[in-house]
Structure formats: C-alpha cells, structure tokens
Length: 216
Image (cartoon, rainbow, N blue to C red):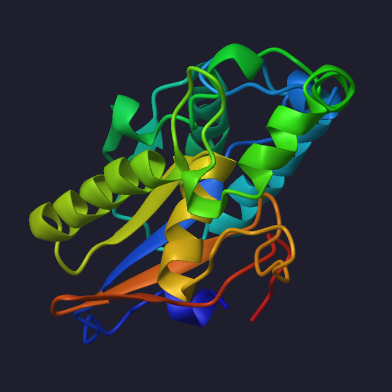
C-alpha cells in the first residue's frame, strides 16, 4: 500500500488526499457523543496514533490539513514526531458534525430517553440531524468545499486530512453513492486511512481501510 502513496519518479500528476480520523478519546471509550465538544485522547488512542506515525514515517506527505478541535490537534502533534517538518493548516470547516442537544450524552442514554427521536433520525439517512445540531448534508457540503479548495491550491500534492468520523463517512459515502441508512453494509472501518484521488476534475475513491501495519 505504501507504493500507492509514494511517487518517487514524480510522474503521477494526480492529487491524493488521505482521510484519517483522530485517535480514540476518553469519551469514545465511554461511548459518549462528542460532536463539537472535546475529550482528550485515551492511552489506547495515543498508542494507535503512534502506530500511524510509524506507518507514515516513510511516506511522502506534502502537508497536513486538520480539524481545529483538540483531539485532532493531539493526533496531528503525535504524527508530526515521526515525519519531516511539513506545513499544517487547521480549519473549523473540518470539525465533527454538531450533535446539538445530544452532545455529552451516551448512546445508552439516547436509547433510554430519546429512543423514538433517535430512530427517526437514524432512518433519515443523509437528512440525519440531531436536535439543534447539523445535518449530514451540511457536513458533506463543508467537507467537499475544503477538499475542492485543496485541489485548487495544491494540485499534484499528497495531503493528509485529519478530522472526524462524521467528515470521513460523509465524503466516502457520498462518493460511493450510499444512502447512509443502517441496513447498508459497512464499507469503512474506524480509524483507518482512506484515499481520494483527483484526476483533472474528477474526484474518486481510492483504496479504503488501510491499516497502519500495512507493509506493501
């Protein structure tokens, strides 16, 4: 898989973006909804990110574009220990989906006290929107705007985009033509690397679910 990311001859003119979610946090381990709120990386989460740093050490990356939330900044800071100095940009446009009134609650709490409302939203697919929160369509719109801007500003580069599950799933599901419904077969795994390719004006999916232990 490293061969897809590295281009030692310089003959490949496509732009490559790698989508990576932040490391596991304390709230992730509690199954607590974070959204725009923040929780620090757990010990397991930091360990996972160090594995990614080791994996990315020998890969040519031109720059990192990141959410500006704390858990993502922690993730980027660990990765930076393993790679040569490169530009890093932080943007609010890559923040996690706002879950509004549900942020800070556990999924068990939602099931116990808001089961009907939760089921209604889960069945809404792309129109999923927690109370006083943000829809998946809104998340996709701002994520694609960031990606299109990167293609315009940095053509031919290899860019690591570090963000959140909501951002990653929205972009991948959009390009895969998914309806974002629970009965669909899952196509991505959490905290794996997913590649996007840009050739001329076409954005396409590359390999998904790249593990940090990949050797090829």
